[in-house]
Image (tube, rainbow over the protein chains, first blue to last red):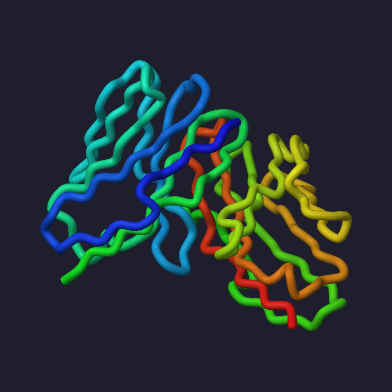
Length: 108
Length: 112
C-alpha cells in the first residue's frame, strides 16, 4: 500500500472554468483511483485508471496517468457549483492510504 | 443496493463511556475498512478485514479500540473507554477485491 499526494491543497475557480488537480506517488502501481468527498459525506469513487492506460474519460472528468513520472491528473471541465468538494487520489493494493486531498471551491 | 450502512449517524457520549459503531457492508463485498477522519490528521485507516478476517490493525490507535466482523454482513468498531481526542468522523467502506471502495455516510462521534 502507499499514499498518493494531491496538489494543490486548495483550489478556487469560477464556475464554468476547468479545474485540474494533480497526484504523485512513489512506487509502481497496478491502478490509480480518484475519489470525491462532499462536506460531511463519505468518499465517492469517481474513476479508476489502470497502469497500462494513459488517459480515461468519464463525463466531465478526464484522468491522465504518467507512470514514468509517477503522477496523475484529474481534470474537471466546465465546473459547476456541485463540484465543490475535496478530491483524493489513491493507488491500488490491499489497502488504501489516502492523502490530504485537494479542496476545490467553485465560485458562482 | 442500499450501499454501506453505518449507525448511528451521530453519537455524543461522555468521556469514559463505551461507544460502539456499526457497519453493514454491501452484499458480496469481501473487504471491509474502518477509517477515521479529523481536520488535523485527515483520513486514517484503522483496520481492514478480508472475508471477515482482520488483516491489518496497525492503524488502531491503542488498546481502547477494537473491531470485529462476526459475519459478512456486519462489523463493529468499539471504543472503551472513550476520550475527547477520539472525537472524529468514523467511516466504514467495503469493496470487492480492493477495487473502488464504497463508503458509508459516516458516524460523527463527539466525546465530551
